[in-house]
Image (cartoon, rainbow, N blue to C red):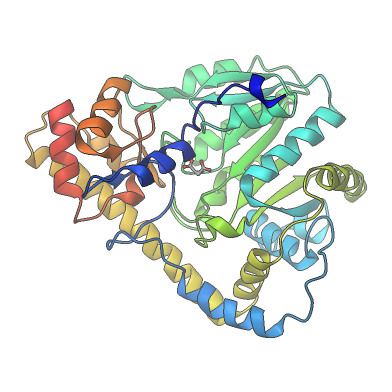
Length: 396
Ligand code: LMR
């Protein structure tokens, strides 16, 4: 049977990590996968997580299963982070949450839920979007469509085209938005633009699906929820996938969440029952450790304050690298204007480098970036900046 199976192509992002690991050249630089690095080129365990880890291990009395949607207190903290602790939504139980193995599982469970509940709905994705979005929703059997998002020539949002396309989305379809730190462009709508988008969603009757993987990496933990909350204010029902992979550095623990906001607590409870069926058929119930770490940190004022400081530190370092990158390119004699990179937010920069340039950087300089030209700014350090910018200057 297996003789007939064809080799699959490597994954656009995680496949790069594999290739990078196999590269034996000294001084190689990985700016592919969205993983944070310190100035010393390490992806550390956050201090708040280390301290919570000791408590979690001490307090653990059983390895028995979690409920299908995970621990209820985890869901409470997720909803507080999304909607704000004093939100009417939290109090009126109009939102339900499941702990999923990473944000990716939240997307897939949501995909299954959409297919089951609204079999004819298509999902609209920004162009461009995260390299895995299409695959996840297609795997769930959903038709994917795309709407314009980025103006590559002017390095800004293609706002007019986006609004025109969204105005044509049929009622009952689903439209996916990146809450902040758009992956791969790093360009987000501002408050006024979010308000207009949310107004359109309410008026047209499409269902917004907010993918929130980078809370705290844009402007701040609260500030980054502005887009999501604009949809709430407009009275929309919502699907939200979120993740603690980046802002807690818990990548391999797979700590994500799927939250549904409905018009009534009653509808939310019915959707939750369907969500649990989808989960049971996928992975049964989530792994416990990462969720316990997050719950412990968010439930302890001292650890929480420590965490907020650590998120700020990561955000500030990335923004510092954006500036150093633009300055160093200039110092290396690059005349092209790269100042747009300092206006982008989050881990990624959409550099504008084309496939050939990306290929040469990898073959000749052992520098790994995603084929779309997406650069992980969080992988830049003061130590690798000169080499990186000299190589980019050479391929431009
Ligand atoms: C990325 O876009 O690099 C991250 O979200 C990691 C991943 O799973 O692709």
